[in-house]
Amino acid sequence: MVGRHVLSFIADDERPKVKEVMRQGREVRYETAVVHKDGTRIPVEFIVRTLERDGEKLRMTIVRDIRDRLANEARIQHLAHHDGLTGLLNRGAFMDRMALLMKHAERKGEMLALLFIDLDNFKRVNDSLGHLEGDQVLTTVSERLVGALRGSDLVGRFGGDEFVVLLTDLASRADIVVVLEALLSVVEVPVRADGRALSVTPSIGVAVFPDDGRQADELIQHADTAMYRAKARGRATYQFFESVLAETAYADLVLEAELAQGLTRNEFELFFQPQVEATSGQLSGAEALLRWRHPQRGLLAPDSFIFVAERHRLMLALGEWVMREAAATARRWREQGLTHGHGPMRIAVNLSRMQFNLDGFADTVQRVLADSGAKGQWLELELTERMLIEDVEHAPATLAQLRSLGLTVSVDDFGTGYTSLAHLTELPLDKLKIDQSFVARLPDDVGAQAITRAIVQMAVGLGLTVTAEGVRSAAQWQLLASWGCQQLQGELVGSPMPAAEFEAWVRAR
Ligand code: C2E
Ligand code: MG
Ligand code: MG
Image 1 (cartoon, rainbow, N blue to C red):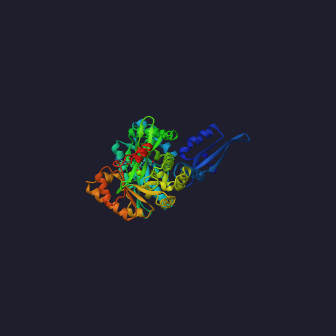
Image 2 (image 1 turned 120 degrees about the vertical axis):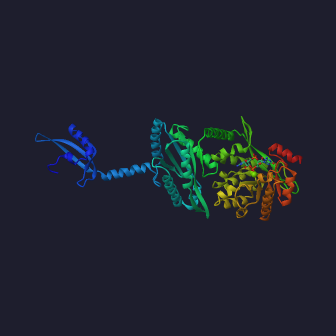
Image 3 (image 1 turned 30 degrees about the vertical axis):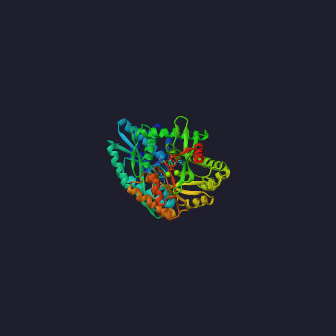
């Protein structure tokens, strides 16, 4: 070093900065770069002081090699901004970069598209195959996403199975569709779970900047809303945001708030629809059907509010209310001597899948029975096929526990799902209710005839009781009875009625 000027060690591009510090005689700590004998650049930290010695002004510099420290910092930066599993941007980093890209696009009048991606079936894979397998699926999905996109597009993972993508440099919506189609075809990951071939596919919601929002939050919210719509439309598909979606989302929010209020204000009520024996016409029980006396909108059927309650945990409270009300009614009917000739009237209660899937559901039922002084024998629970197949693990035990309490368990809307009868026979069940869509096509539709008849005969052969729903004509009744269907329910017998009306109806018979 002797004889060489200090500045000759400094990297070319750093020289002006170092010169300036020297010229000003500042005493500081700063970062710069020196050049190794072999030409490599070495990031360094300088701590500089000015000294006086024998009347001479000296500059002392402490030089520290900071290569390791910078590497560590970069790693920490990466960890802080990226998702540990997939290496994609995490939420915070994604939002930061998205904000920059939006500003840029705003200035240039360019279009951006935000894609909100949620994986279908992922929860099942994760639950049944374990987290290692689940992680593997997420990594594969992330690699394929990145592979299908351009380097200038932003890809992030918001946690779980939620991915977000910001597409840049778009000329039109048609460009977005091209990317969406590519993603749909590339991101599908086949896996085996529960001994079945499953496919993890993306459901994608799209919000376009600036049409669907000028703020990052707003765009994400709208893409999320659209994603839910894509899922509802049958998964493995995409959906562009439409402002009607926002209106629907808002209406749902209002409805949700009103539902909660309705529960505390006692606005709910059970209607009862009679069920009769097909051969004798004798009353065998009643199905409890939920109604809401909405203060402004009048009497509402469950189809107009159950789906909102189900999306939120409100369904649990509402479902428990239904059960309590049904149990109390069953008890009152018994006390009033309202029977169908052979024992007290059984009331069938519809369950939401949220209730059934909850741990300890049977315990809740037991508590409700105890609280209302009702017997299990007085109640029947209606489950859908979907509830039974979605909860293959717990369903058998829960069903067995319910039956040991004396409850009858039936499968509602049978025929609309994809369950095979064979699968159902492995479960402890009492009854099948044939969906009204089949009954409605009787007696003329030959296809409906064949299916309905096959279901009835197989079910009866398996020892299950069969009820047909939505019976509206004597011809339907006759046909069903001739095949061996034991019970009927529908307008022909009686429509759902308020409790008092139902009681009068029973007495009049
Ligand atoms: P579901 O359990 O299949 O109930 C039968 C539906 O068919 C009832 O509609 C009933 O009024 C209707 N229905 C019965 N006979 C006839 C007929 O001859 N013609 C026609 N057109 N319709 C008939 P509702 O009361 O609107 O209930 C709709 C669905 O809402 C029910 O289908 C059930 O899945 C659900 N639901 C009702 N109450 C509850 C409840 O308390 N909890 C839950 N989780 N779901 C409920
Ligand atoms: Mg039902
Ligand atoms: Mg039904």
